[in-house]
View: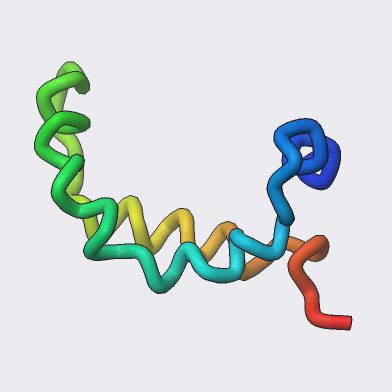
Length: 64
């Protein structure tokens, strides 16, 4: 399903491998996320690391 989503947007799924290198690019937007969420949230790094971990486990990104 993930491959179909990326294909529909005409984006190579291999870009997900590069997410781990974009931490500081995304960090400035974190205060807006905190303001939009009701209740407490953990810090930016917690969620970024969580997403990087999910991406690392995806079969579709495995090198062939």
